[in-house]
Amino acid sequence: MLRYGYITNGLADHTLEQAIEMLSTAGYQGIGITLDHQHLDPSSVDDPHLADVGALLRSSDLEPVIETGARFALDPMRKHWPSMVSLDADDRKRRIDYYIRAIQIAGSIGAQVVSLWSGVAEPGSARPDGERFLLEALGQLLPIAREHGITIGFEPEPGMLIESLEQWCWLRQQITDETLGLTVDLGHLAVTEPSPFDAALSQVVSDVVHVHVDDCARGVHEHLPLGTGELDFAPLLRVLIEHGYSGLALVELSRDSHRAPELIDRSIRFLQGVETDLDSSCRDNTRKGTS
Image 1 (cartoon, helix red, strand yellow):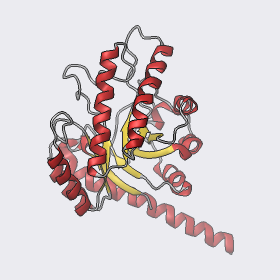
Image 2 (cartoon, helix red, strand yellow; image 1 turned 120 degrees about the vertical axis):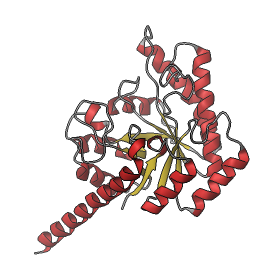
Image 3 (cartoon, one colour; image 1 turned 60 degrees about the vertical axis):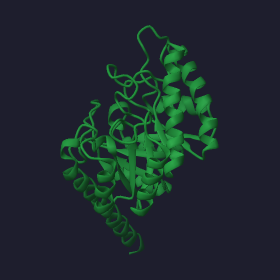
Image 4 (spheres, rainbow, N blue to C red; image 1 turned 90 degrees about the vertical axis):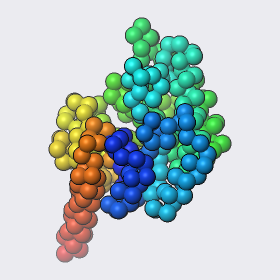
């Protein structure tokens, strides 16, 4: 069985304490905490608060992951800016400092993974420059993550400098440090990858350290509730299970905070149902093979 959680960017109308209680009650085993003004604002959260959150997570049996995809965390007017591939060195440093603080927070609350992405190439930026900026930034972050016992889960994000699994493979060739692994968003497979999507996932599954779960329509980067897009989740979950993936799989529905209580319950029942069907299919195939 996979271990499921839910990301707090889809719980923006609830406090972190409420989110923890809701997810624990619903039967989740993990929580992705998106560092933002609602939940563990990295610019103001202090050590006593982090200690309290860590204790609450442990008592609730929820494993945390730190997510860094807050839309306006560093600039109130520009989404996801600045990034590790911004043209200006001072801008890149702001993003790197944010990630360093994320690593520190992760260590304080017992998270083992910090998930992040490259950022969007700015107008006028040449791709080789962006790639160089990215490698330089990760070169600064990975030793700090290693020092804190944190794995960096790098997420290819549609529209960003690194958006596809092919581009992740390029990055993996440049950086072989095991402190860096892959965050794979199952919904993104329908946006950036050729079908069959389970075959695409199989090619990189050995790199996967973290998973986001959402549905998408083919070629459209819009996270949809599970079962309302075009993904067949059964073969994707099968790849993860058969490979022995032991990390968390976190539902990410950042546009649906207004109906979070409904989707929290619906999402875990959907995923558990898929696994039940997989298990039944496996037993049927075993019986046929021995008959």
